[in-house]
Every structure is written in structure tokens, then in C-alpha cells.
Image (cartoon, rainbow, N blue to C red; front, side):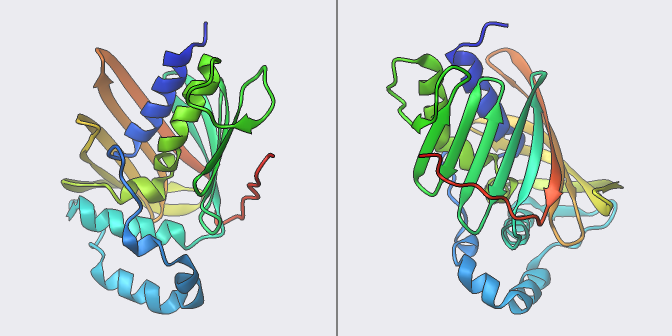
Amino acid sequence: MRVNKWGVGIVLAATVLLTGCTAGAEEPADSEPTSAAEETPATDGAASDSDCPELSEGATVDGAELGACITEAMTDTAGYAAKTSILGMDTTARFNPETDAVETITPMGSLILIGDDAWVKTPTTEWQVADPNSSDPIVAALSSGAATAAGTDPATAAGALTGEFTVTGTGTRLGQDVYLVSGTSEAQGVAVDVVFEVTEDYVVLATSGSTEAAGQMIETSLEVTEWDVEQDIVAPL
């Protein structure tokens, strides 16, 4: 398959659509004081639990309330890794909440985002500072994707959830019991049908989603492969 700028863009966009993230959504204020959360995890956890919706089969939960609980739960971790399947292409990603770092590896290239700084690498180039205006269309597309890379993190994306969701069943993932939470969310003006696999502690261990964009059906899935394991993501330059 010929890889072009559109191909890179659709993969990155679909990854964001997967988690129901709205364009330009920022992390909720709850997730910003990371250091404070680390110093008093027991207190924060108790406060969060009291405000979080009960997860039980058949229950209907508010997306905004659920999203806030997911964001807080997934920020209070050493880190995690995940794999995503989009349009038949596999993507891997690693997240380190403490350093606000994301690394994404796609068939078209790699992207590292640490805070506001971003670097990209294609199969034919070395690491370089992200440049959306690059004459290389793949570098330009990956660089443009840096703006939405944080949205591929379920912790960040969950903060933008809206609408009602229903607990439709249960299952297991990474040795933990999970609730299947289904619903429809808006992403960049597009309706996205999503299913979250959520633990009783509001950690998302897997998601699946489907939507139609530009006349094309996009089906995606994300599975957390490592949870609460520190991810060493460093600046490549």
C-alpha cells in the first residue's frame, strides 16, 4: 500500500476518534496537580470514588462523570502501554503520566511528545523536531498529528466524554474483571459508537469504536498491554 499524507492523517485522526475525544480538548483540571495526587493518593482516591457512578450490569451512567473518574484513575499510575488496530494497521503507544509523555509508533513513522515538545521519525529519516510545514509529506503529517497525540491517551480522551453510557456486560482483561460500557459520543462533529472495558477502579483496559468519516467506515480497537508499569520515554535529540 502506498503511504501518503492522507494515510498518516486518517490513522492519527481515527485513533483520537476511537476514544471519543473532541477536537482541541484539554486535560481536565482534575488531572493537572499530578504531584499532589501522588503525595496523597488515599485521600484523592476516596474523594473520587464517592463522586463516581456505580458500575453494575444494566446501569446507565453519565459520560462526563465517568470520564472524570477514568482520567483520575489512569493518571495515578506509573505508566502503561497499548496497541491499537485502525483500518487494518497496527499502532503501538506508550504513556507516562508523570512526565506528560507519549510515544506512538505507526506503520508510517514514530512520534514522541513530551509536554509541548514533539519529535518525529519516518522509516527513511532520523529523529527530527516536528515540523508541520516540512516538504516531506509524511514528516508534515506526523508533525501535525502531534497536536492530537495526547488525545490518543485514554486518560486524556475520557475527559471529553459526554452523553449517556450503559453497562452492557462484564469480562476480563489483563487478569482483571471489567465492565463493558457502551454508548455514542461526539468526536469532531462525528458520532462515534464506543465500548469501554472499565475496571471497578475506573481504569480503561480496552476500547473499541466505529464511525463513518468521509464516506468510509472506520473501525478501531485499543488494548492496554501493560498497566502500571513505568514507561521510559525520553527526548530523542
